[in-house]
Image (cartoon, rainbow, N blue to C red; front, side, top):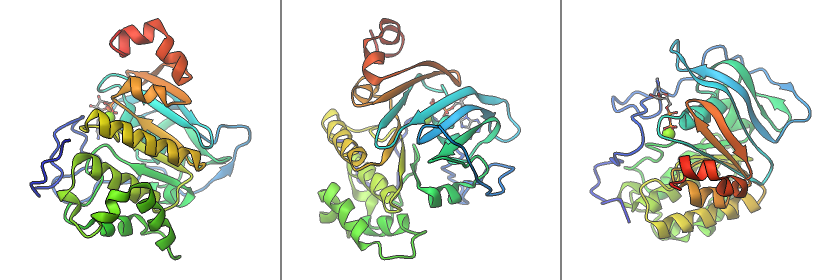
Length: 280
Ligand SMILES: Nc1ncnc2c1ncn2[C@@H]1O[C@H](COP(=O)(O)OP(=O)(O)O)[C@@H](O)[C@H]1O
Ligand SMILES: [Mg+2]
């Protein structure tokens, strides 16, 4: 089990050094991409969620994604794998409205939401757990869940009870500072926080990073449970074999492009994918 509980904050040194979400200087940088006017328009005959032919990069910088397509159907699990720096997190941010798309679009539940801000996308049913700094370490577990419900004006106590049913350890530790929890428990807080808005689509960027194999298996079981309740899961994973094993659909990204797209099982059985991305 990782997470030393030193109370110094979320100091895991893993993944990339993405400063677009985590800003150690203290002022939030989760700015929406340019050109967002919050207009939506209906689009027929698409998967439940699709980031379609997405091309774009950060600010005025070079394109990171090149004609990249990621989709997931209702209640299914889609997994994005690929080498470090392939653009997996960037693809997630593009779907969430944190990237300037030069081409392509994002469609959720029959609506083109390409021009919505991230906040508006949460209102449309997206929940996003970013790769880093995805909890408030100095707040209690319960306060983290309350923060997750920030856009709700109705009574969210039922949703909180559901989160505690899904992750019973969080109920035991609900009055403890989230920063004192183990790595796996922190990830449960992060997932629980995202569930508080009752999303239709839950996006998870490396939810099992830094946790033991047993904790990873447990988290995957809970994620399967969430999917069975009808929520679509779009997940980036370093534990590619295990993640593809539970995936309805798998995407191998390389240098911002779709390299392989198939069912999770088919990708696991594909000799080229095995050799290049799954360690043989
Ligand atoms: N906020 C950012 N600003 C500029 N470039 C970034 C930013 N975040 C990531 N990148 C670049 O985008 C590319 C893809 O990164 P990323 O999507 O984080 O890869 P992955 O998640 O697959 O490891 C890398 O070259 C990375 O340096
Ligand atoms: Mg990443």
